[in-house]
Image (tube, rainbow, N blue to C red; front, side, top):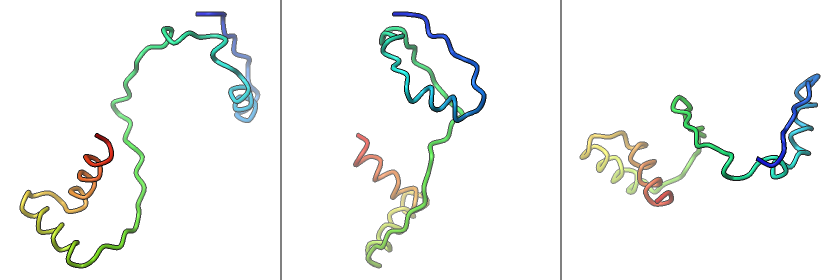
Length: 86
């Protein structure tokens, strides 16, 4: 740890937000000062989207999802995850 970080008492959220926006934490911390943490109860943020697919493709996706007994939207999400988040 480089030097001690003393937090002021904030009057409101705007004041606190301004404080954190201006401060350089590199002055106070080294990378080895940090610890890994886990937040098991947090759910990933999801966002609804609209996508146009050819009818034949949607039918094939639904058939494949039915074969492996999963909802077709879950099959699409899983396939996208495997493709882009390897």
